[in-house]
Image 1 (cartoon, rainbow, N blue to C red):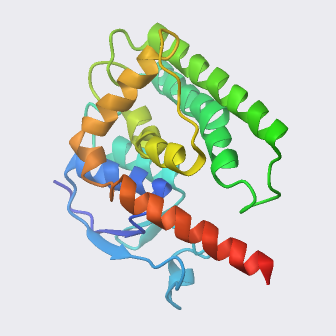
Image 2 (image 1 turned 180 degrees about the horizontal axis):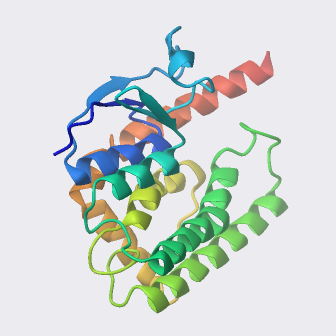
Length: 233
């Protein structure tokens, strides 16, 4: 139990904010929850985060921003089995987070938001991105197989820092498929990846902080429609 007063500024639909929500839930940390409407941000919010982004976390009178910074702070400040115990293990976990972000998350984001944020991708570019995405998933699968034993989580039998950091994006893979029609293949080169996804989907700290696939699909579709309407005017 912490004596610090924690105030969490978030939006339930934001995957980055969910990183912090997962950490708070997994660590069972009492905190105040402040929901920020990202389409109608409060006038006072820039005093909390000048970038007006979520998440932000106030620890007493000190405010932290940036989701990965906040999540790692919580895991380090309030010890548990979630945080790697050695510098080498922490370095390996940070590498894996970067690998997934660059090789998988960047590709799913570019495909899902094609024509919404930046120019629309033509069919040739989309096909190339899908190939790069699948290659990235295979790289992640290989890393998991080599570094996490039998799993099922990213770094072993129990959830850890990598699952906190990347879990929100695994939970949103069905959203990506619903929007784009692209589905991660099955097969031996993808088996360990799918095992990891299933483990995170069943982890209470992750699923209890996720609004649900249908809710997020609706929000994404609404956002896409709103941006395209504005572009047409």
